[in-house]
Length: 131
Image (tube, rainbow, N blue to C red; front, side, top):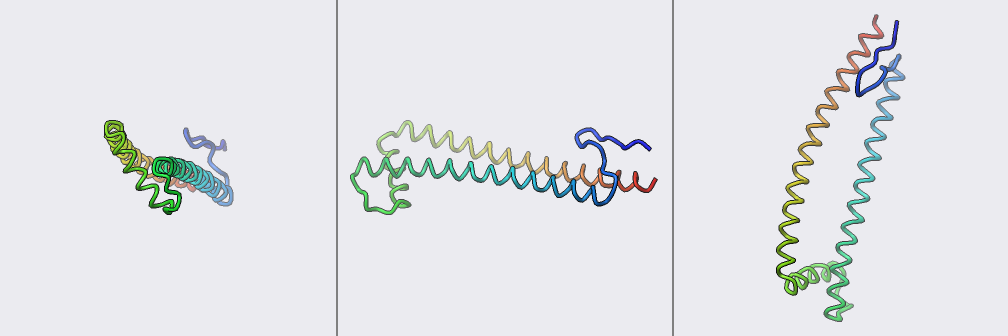
């Protein structure tokens, strides 16, 4: 009997052990993908926060205020000194947030579709090994 091929999935594992190994590998790859995104996001946030901290300190000479407070004050100071750019930045931020929400919804839909396909693939696998 020829091993079935499913587009977007590949060849169906031959045994429950192979299926479990495939599922573990898929889960691991997904976790690594999410961890990489988390690290990239954290680095971008730290960079942005440091820029506001530096802006505050360079414009006020205040190097004693804690970083968290200096970041907020730096953001406010930058907006006071650059109102047009601040408004544009806020609008761009609002658009990014909307895009992220839409992306999140799409990822949720993709995840649900993926889960449905995995369930279908497992059912096909079970039917295949029973033949």
